[in-house]
Length: 200
Image 1: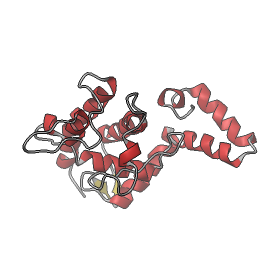
Image 2 (image 1 turned 45 degrees about the vertical axis):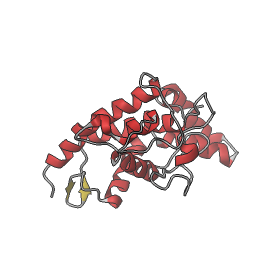
Image 3 (image 1 turned 60 degrees about the vertical axis):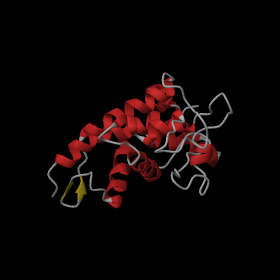
Image 4 (image 1 turned 90 degrees about the horizontal axis):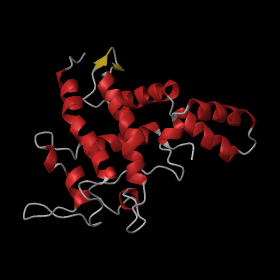
C-alpha cells in the first residue's frame, strides 16, 4: 500500500520505510520499500535526468550535453507518475481489468503497448518516461478533444476513426477520465514551452 501516491508522499511513511530497509531481512520486502523510496525527489530527479539524457527527446533543452527540463515539464512527468500511471493500472469495476491489462502486454495492442508497473505499482523511471512519451504522442495539440488518449477510452467511433477494442472504459464525468483530461489539457503548455526554449 505504501506505493499509493497519498502514502508515498507522507513523511511518516517514508521515515518508516527507510527504517524497514535497514533492518528487514527479506530481500523482496527490502526491494519493495526501496522502490517506494526511489520515487522521492532526492532519488527520482537524478534518475529522470539520466533517462532524459539517454532518450535525447527534442522537447527537452540541453545545455553542455545535460538535459535542462523546465519546472513545468518536471511537474508534468511527476503528475503522470503519481496520477496517470496509477489510473492506467487501476482495475475498473465493470470487468475488473485495467488499461494495462491489455496495453501492458506486448503484442496485445500493437498500436499502443505500454510498459507495465509491477504488482505494487512501481515502474522504473526509464519505463515511466517511455510511457509518458507514448501517451504524449496521442495528444492532438491542435484540438485536444480529438486526442486518442481521450476518445479511445470513451469508445468514440465514426466514419473517420475506429472505436476502442476494449469497449467503453469511462463516462466523460468519471473521476479517472477527468484526471486523464487534466493531464492532456496541460500538454500544449508543456510542449510549447519546450519548443520555444533555446536549445544548445
